[in-house]
Length: 226
Ligand SMILES: Cc1cc2nc3c(=O)[nH]c(=O)nc-3n(C[C@H](O)[C@H](O)[C@H](O)COP(=O)(O)O)c2cc1C
Image 1 (cartoon, rainbow, N blue to C red):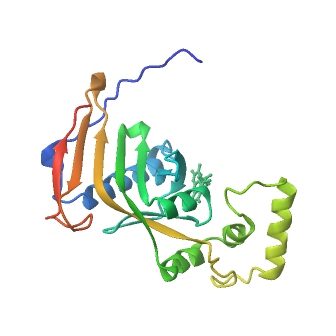
Image 2: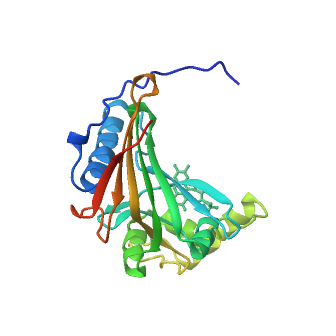
């Protein structure tokens, strides 16, 4: 191990008075702040990278990073292969936890909830917006399955490219039926703001009834010790 470099988390902090009545506007603001910071300073690459934790049928957790390519009142969302490790886990146990982390900004957001598949129509809209190579890649990869070799993968890519050549159109490659989005219906959203001497601010929205991330009557806020 390298010698430890200790950072004082001199962040702006977060005060109860800064909170909206529902979490969505603050999630949007912090994501936008990260995007703006990346544009200005270049130290927050992939500002929408989100760690997603699932648990398999035996209770074993698995965590991986994906891209939060959707954010709306129904929750944060991401796209993936439904037969991947995470897809199989979510089939058996839809409970999920996820975290956006922006270390240079001393900020993180944690979500707890239940993952729900997006409709194929919604997934198809997003799929069509991806570059040709990513759409072919979705077909060529049986994500999370063992792979014989890199060459096997590249042969699969070439075969799908022959099947569906690049026409420059969004519908030249069909949506695989094993690929699509999940949205995380949240029961809890924590805003973590790092502060000096590890005395961070943690303000947690807890859902008190039915309602989405934009519903001002569906949440109460709890401050937690750092
Ligand atoms: C920055 C970053 C972004 C990623 N984005 C995605 C994504 O949007 N969707 C996805 O399925 N995998 C994405 N991956 C790959 C996943 O981390 C993971 O390897 C893959 O989804 C398989 O995970 P699983 O076997 O646990 O299902 C990304 C990885 C990184 C490091």
